[in-house]
Image (cartoon, rainbow, N blue to C red):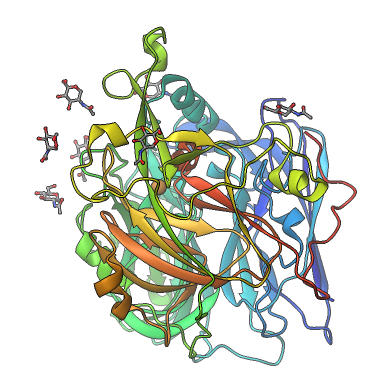
Length: 558
Ligand SMILES: *[C@@H]1O[C@H](CO)[C@@H](O)[C@H](O)[C@H]1NC(C)=O
Ligand SMILES: *[C@@H]1O[C@H](CO)[C@@H](O)[C@H](O)[C@H]1NC(C)=O
Ligand SMILES: *[C@@H]1O[C@H](CO)[C@@H](O)[C@H](O)[C@H]1NC(C)=O
Ligand SMILES: *[C@@H]1O[C@H](CO)[C@@H](O)[C@H](O)[C@H]1NC(C)=O
Ligand SMILES: *[C@@H]1O[C@H](CO)[C@@H](O)[C@H](O)[C@H]1NC(C)=O
Ligand SMILES: *[C@@H]1O[C@H](CO)[C@@H](O)[C@H](O)[C@H]1NC(C)=O
Ligand SMILES: *[C@@H]1O[C@H](CO)[C@@H](O)[C@H](O)[C@H]1NC(C)=O
Ligand SMILES: [Cu+2]
């Protein structure tokens, strides 16, 4: 069997930087042409200069962004860390963090996915600089379901603070207020022309007139959905989250953190220089956000070395939900989908913010959200609390009680007008480490419902261990009587992160065929920290290959 081994060790980190790596994994090899990829990731502080200032940033192997992993897809049935939850990575969910000086080898076999994924740290805000792309080429002897592009390039969008990102989140954790917004967005680690001290390092993407290239766009930003566009060029979307989609053409992409989109671009304009530009899709009314624009340059070969100013594309307004929606609702799976029917668990899960009233004696400096409160977030009114001394997977596997409870509610404890003017009495969730248990093989439908508590906004909801079909999305409160008829049971897209519309809902389905403990969370890191998460515990199945493997001997201890 083909396997990926990714060793991670941490050097030069002070004891406060604990970490765990999440490999939003990849692919590879069939039994016939098995191949093992081995990567060593050394997590270390490295000097990185951006926006005129040098920071001691945490990197992998001194690289920012980190190394790209390239593999070939194996066979055709989807495997996603199947039975190897131990290698999933999120701290206190599937493992304890890797301590400074220690190491851990992530061993997993993967196949069935093709396209672009990425790996990133899953501890505190380390992923601000600890991330990289994973490219999964078609298996040997196979080709893309579209004409072979002449060249390929990764466009990894990131977010940069002119501060230590760990200090930024620590400050917010102390004050209870929202963390400082970033100072720049980046493309492949570089802010680009429109920022100070950044011009000479602006990323260039070379093209040859007449050729068609493949761009693998990844949103690795911590806290921001982003619009992406390229001056004068149309983009043909062919894949997302490592699954192919029916090609469609668009001028603008919108990606939430965690999402990837593969696009074809034909160099059919007059040879020259064109900006690739990205800026925020900020759906929360009145909330502060980084309103800057990152750029790279699409450069025709005949314009190489030219100093002419690249053409700047128009970008949608920051709050252009209509453009975001037109994009997210254009996705269809390439092939007829195997959508689960005869649902065993029909879950209705609200997702949104909240605020906790500070107890009277709390110091003012610790209650800096509006009117002496602290921000929080929840799913079904439970603000998720990570265990602190063992992972949920270890506790589950070893039968250690007292770490989590299995009473995550299948529906909101109180029904209310989720997207209306929500009564203040509903704003404060409870805290808990609650999981929802699933028998192996159960068919699950989740209606995700955004709420307007404090403020409504779009949430990129990501489920570990699975790809799911997105059957429908809409605005307002989900209405089973009228909205069920909108479900696409023929060719819904298969993804691992769904953009839950602002003041809206989305419906996803999957089969619980991967044993382990899998976190479902908003991919805006600020919201994870506030508790916008829950965990599925999927039990072992009876058959061979349906059971969680034994933990590896080097699994970190807390
Ligand atoms: C956050 O922003 C405030 C206001 O600009 C600044 O005083 C503070 O130092 C920043 N915090 C961090 C951790 O950079
Ligand atoms: C970004 O926000 C700043 C201050 O909040 C404002 O001065 C500036 O005009 C805004 N830029 C854009 C492009 O909206
Ligand atoms: C979007 O923002 C503009 C101004 O920035 C405002 O006039 C408009 O009402 C906003 N639209 C929505 C849907 O919030
Ligand atoms: C804070 O209190 C003021 C005055 O009571 C009120 O107008 C405002 O809406 C409150 N803001 C929040 C976010 O609760
Ligand atoms: C882990 O922490 C929980 C609560 O935080 C505590 O009840 C339990 O005793 C701790 N277990 C160990 C093994 O330290
Ligand atoms: C929301 O409801 C509260 C309490 O019922 C009311 O005071 C407030 O004006 C309402 N806000 C809006 C925007 O309707
Ligand atoms: C959440 O639970 C708390 C505590 O029971 C309650 O006060 C609040 O109204 C609940 N909110 C919702 C949205 O269910
Ligand atoms: Cu969120």
